Length: 406
Image (tube, rainbow, N blue to C red; front, side, top):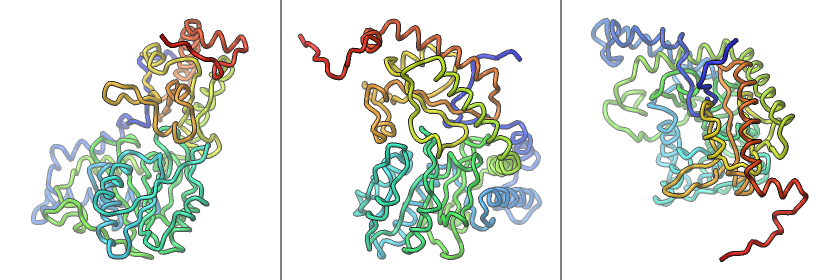
C-alpha cells in the first residue's frame, strides 16, 4: 500500500476525529440543535437525551455511573476543577497537596496557583523509569494532606504510574485521589472502582473525538466527593460546572468512548505491534539511541527516543513530512529541554535530541517502515556533519574534554 505524505505520528498531542464520531455529531448542529437545559419543548428534550446517553457512554468506559460524569470544555478545565474544587471545599480540613514533578502543566500550574493562596504542595521526584516512588509518596503524606494528584500516564514518555497502589494508599488514609487520565483513558483499561480513583479528567480529542470538550468523573459513593465550583451561573452539571452544554461535542465524546471500549483490546495490540516494529527498526540500524522511560509500564502507542549527537530541531526539520514532537520546548528566545526528561535524569544534550512518536488508530505498517527509513537517513546524515559523533566513534571521552574559550 502506498504511503500518503505527510504522515501523522503525534497522537499524544491530538487525534483526528473518527468518521463514526463525526457522523454521530452532525445531526446536533442542525436538526437537533436544541439547548439541553430547555426542558419545555422537544428540541431541548432531544438534546438532553443525547447528553444523558453520552454521559452513560463515558461512565461505562471507566466503570462509573452516569451521575458521576460532569462535562467540561476539556482536560485543562477538568484538572483545574478537580484540584481547585477539592482545595476550596476542604480547606478547613487541611492545606497540603501532593503531586509529581512531571505532571502536565494543567496540573502543575494549578498547584502553583494554589501555593499563592496559602496551600502547601509537595512535588515528588520520579525514578529513572519515569514512575513515582510509592515510598516517596508515603513519606510525603502529612496530617494536613487533603489531595494526592498523580497522572495515570505521562503525555511525553507514555509511562504508566502505579495508580491502583496509590489509590489504595490514599483511601486507607482518607485522602482524595485525583488523576489526570487524559493519555490513558481509551488506550488501556481504566477502572475508577478498582483503582480507588475519586476524580478523573478526560479529554475527547485524545481519543478520536472533537476538540473543546472533556469530562470529569466525580465519585458519588464511598466517599461522596464534593467540589467547589470554579465557574458560576445557571447551576448546570449539578452545580459543579455552569454553562450551556456543548451538545454536539458531548455526543462526539460519548461516541468516542463507546468505540474505545469496544475496540481497545484489538487496537492496543495493533498499536503495540507498530510501536515495537518502529523501535526494533531504529535500534537495528542506528547506534547511540536510547528509550526514555520504562518499556514495561508504558502506553502501547508511545515511543520516546533520544538520538545522541543529533540536535532535535535539526532532526525535526529533516523529517518534515512526518509529524512528531521534539523533546525541546521553545520558551521565549531559548530552546529548553523537556522538564519531563530532565526529571528522569536525562542529560541536557540527550534531552535535546529526543523525539516522541505517538502512534494512532489510523497509522499503518507501511507508514512505520517509511518513518524508520527516513529517520535512519536523516540521523546518519546529521551525524556525518557532527565532529562530536566522529570523536565518540574514535573512543574519545567527550565528557572529560576541556574546551578552549576565546
